[in-house]
Amino acid sequence: MKKLFFISCVILIVAAVACNNNKDPHAEHKPEAPKEMYTCPMPEDSVFSDKPGTCPKCGMDLVKMQQGNKEMYTCPMPEDSIFSDKPGTCPKCGMNLVKMDQDNHEHDKVEYTCPMHPEIIKDKPGTCPICGMDLVKKETGSKQVSDVELESLLKPTNEFVISSIPVTTMEKRGEQIEIEALGNIAYDTRQVGSISARVSGRIEKLYVRYRYQKINKGQKIFDIYSPELLTAQQNLLFLLKNDAENSTFIQAAKDKLLLLGMSNEQLQQVIQSGKPSLTITVYSNYSGHIHEAANGGTMNTSAGIMKDISLITEELSLKEGMYIQKGQSVFTVFNPDRAWAILNIYGDNQSLVKVGNTVRIVPETAPGKDFRAGIDFIEPFYRKESKTLTARVYFNNSSLKIPIGSQIRATIFGNSKEAYWLPKEAVLSLGMDKVVFSKTDGGFKAVKINTGIIHQKHIQIIYGLTVTDSVAANAQYLMDSESFIKIKN
Image 1: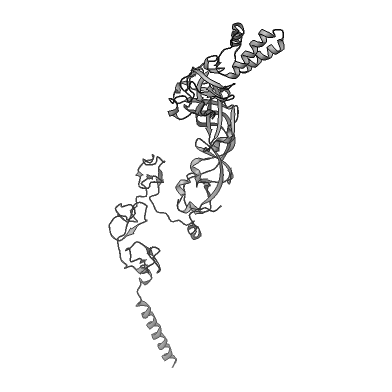
Image 2 (image 1 turned 90 degrees about the vertical axis):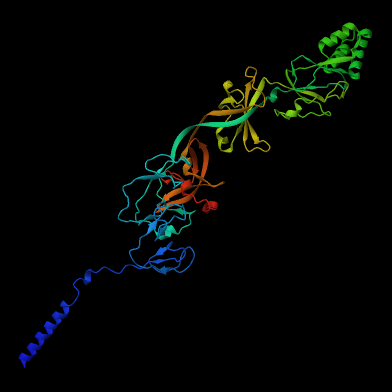
């Protein structure tokens, strides 16, 4: 019985060994089944995924792709952004699709491209022929990004941007500020004189004939007949003839005639001749140009403002034989030898301009006649329909002879500014707001800042950043104009 049991055990062991020997010895080394891939049926092979779902472009259900050693093609620019299973052209840029060969990428080839115009590709550094920006090195090899989280990719582009562009930081230093300004030459209204009628009467003779006529001090302007002057002369002659001892009345009659506009020479001539003069000559007390004439008894004396060019050759409104009233302003005389330069200072530079700053002025009509002067006055208001502050620079125009109304360019010196500065390219202007892209973990975050003046290639930072903050060196490169119509503070 024991012998029979032993034989049965041996038979079972032999059968078990035989079954194990029948297994495939290479079963453990067989390759796994190819991974299933899914794609959108329209357009064909434009969206790929390793699991079922819907197309993010058209919303259609993804379909299973036929497995096999299918050749794939892609657009060379941007790298691997467009895929297809057959040759053709890129629907974005029109370039020919190239065959994908993962074992044959030219990883060692260095290429340079423009950040703003990726269609520009060169094999050496340089500048973009379109916008002039420096070319940057193009990454031709694809690398797996492992430090970017899905939450960062899903943030709105006006809050968070993923990029690896260079960064910069703001610096605190003092800058010598030179402010450029434009302006024009105007009359110095402190030198303006008015020729008025001291008595009522009739113009018998007019010695000036046209607008802007040059006159000198002491020159005859017009002769006037005035009953009031005639009566005052007769009173003086009556006193001299009938009451010569009454010196008080006689002196009062002389003073009255002088106050009414009669000169000492004319007064002595009346006393010596013993006859009153029917007309009295009015002389100019100023040298300059007859700038304005009477019009209906009123005068427009807008300081330093030139009239319409058509009025230069227009006839004078005052004619011989016309009557004028006592106190009426007849002519206004401007002295072109005393002028000022009116400079327009824009808002971002107004805090830097002070009275006493040295100014270099270059007239556009005579660039060789540039001169230096100082700011004498800053108007404490904005002129009508102007968004600039006005500064006045007084100067002697007798030797320069710069025409009134000439356009000028000016450079204002003597300003230094200790502040925090950042390159202009790092700041993005959104109209009323300014933003920078601050470097954070995983990308760049849009940060609103307050800026000050702009000096050469730098802009002043008032608040919003610290010296330890790193910001994108070129904010324009990260901007999505449509997303930045509204930003979050």
